[in-house]
Image (cartoon, rainbow, N blue to C red; front, top):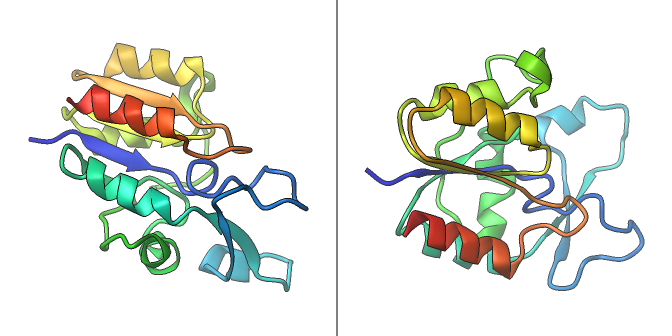
Length: 169
């Protein structure tokens, strides 16, 4: 069975923290209104930067991984993000509670990522992963796990894709 590749949107695919006045090279700007944003106070659509080359990179990794959305966008990533990247509809983690309490100083997603992965190997890309999350996974997950923190100012880079490919191989 292939390992899971758990994909966060904001940070890895959308470098939202890049300088607001400068779109990162290779990225295009999209205006979106996912459910969570429509309920936000802002009347303006959400600005999302996407690098269309990331879709081909993820599809290449799909030979070695089962791709899964691990984002607060949940299934809406299939409607708003996937089509811009040329991705098929992907399964997603349906978080039991978002932004809730987390064990021992870990990121709130970590406990649910381990629950979703079960006994399967997985790689997880997210901008909120810390050493505490890695330690938590090492202590509680029965299989190999790669937790990669992606800089939210830069997004996924060539070395990140290379690391993911090597790890799965």
